[in-house]
Image (tube, rainbow, N blue to C red):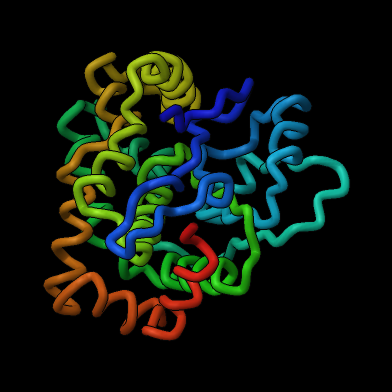
Amino acid sequence: MTRHIDFDGIENFRDFGGYDTAHGRPLKRGLLYRSANHAYASDSDLEQMKALGIAAIVDLRRTDERTREPSRRWPGYAGAVIENDIASPHADWAVVMKDLPEVTAQWFYDDSLNYYRRAPFEPRHVDLFRRYFQALADGVSPVVVHCAAGKDRTGLICALTHHIAGVSHEDIVADYLLTNDESRLARKMDFLGPWIEKQVGLTPSREALRVAVSVNTDYLEMAFSVIAAAHGSTDGYLTDVLGVDGSLRERLQARLLA
């Protein structure tokens, strides 16, 4: 099954529906999309998204990211845009790296692991995740969820969506790891290297860049681990923090399962 959809200027665009679930009904295809940011979308890309019938765009980026790389949308787009300006304690790479003598593969790994340790509980994420699930339950779809690279914040919210739908943990992890597509990693590294040099004057090694543009099972498992430690289970977190109680879960499954 091909999940990646090719675009000129949007990375990591793919359908994360279609998986089997514990309910005996698979997730629908063509309703749930994920990607990297849309700042570099070509006119052709915008037409392609329009053709997908996108009814909601969930931009998980912080205010500074959206200002630095504003999204492109097709003329006449009238769908929902879910974003916020709630401050984040997680500093932008362009800020953090200015104080570093170098950025190594280990630095990127540790930074990501620490990020996943905090991400499920950040107020800005909680707000965005709650609004996203409510929109899906209300039938606002197809939806595309994205952040900057479409791998971490996006990976977490997609994993939670899969959990709610009853997708197996094995398939949740497998879908998350599709970001590590070898045919695309080099292109992402070629973009990120000059970006970091422009922002902070550092030149990361190719090894470091590979870690920076990839995801690791350790990251997602860290998020699920801290969620369980704080709330007993992923379901406890969904109810206590995101407001996804039994009623909302049923509405989501009714909308998303075939």
